[in-house]
Image 1: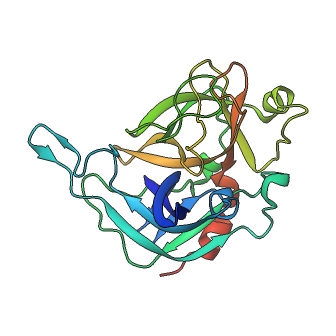
Image 2 (image 1 turned 180 degrees about the horizontal axis):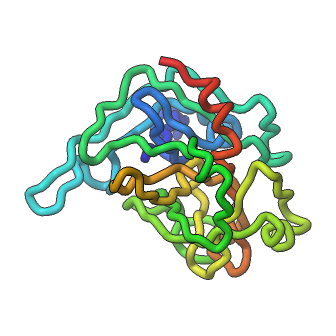
Length: 248
């Protein structure tokens, strides 16, 4: 997956910080949440980093086996959904980032599949588990703390939008273009995971492929608290929009 790098000013110096995630869908495109590109005060989106696992080591190694160095690639164009309204509501929270140059794929950097098949698009995943990943905060019930140094992943159950609307009643509106997952104590996406992938493996031609089912969008301020599931942009609802807005 990808990390989004921002430029900001600290004590007169320009520094880079990483705050959101994204999913690689082709050599030139990363899919993320619109709020990761538009809702950052005093910061501007600068680049995408791929090939990261542990933010404290470069390259990442296990024994004598090392991954290639990270790739930092500038952003050529941001194409966010025109109906996204910011923090007023989180519907249409989706954005395509076109990169200035192609990602070099290797054993540690690969694109994720999009859910373009009808049997996936029409399937009801309620009760099934998917994986969410990121470098976000990882302590249950906290509102602010440092994120993880290592890329983490957790399995979360998909919840119906009816259940989700009830749990978020009075806090956040749930739209048909969104999906919900989580609601188990200590298992959730959190601050810093925004824009990252909600994934599910499928067997395709006797090979396991991961598909991008959701994009981390919004959740309770104190993450990992039962029974408040996280809210994700449903990628299947935006397949036509995605395909209409990518080019080579």
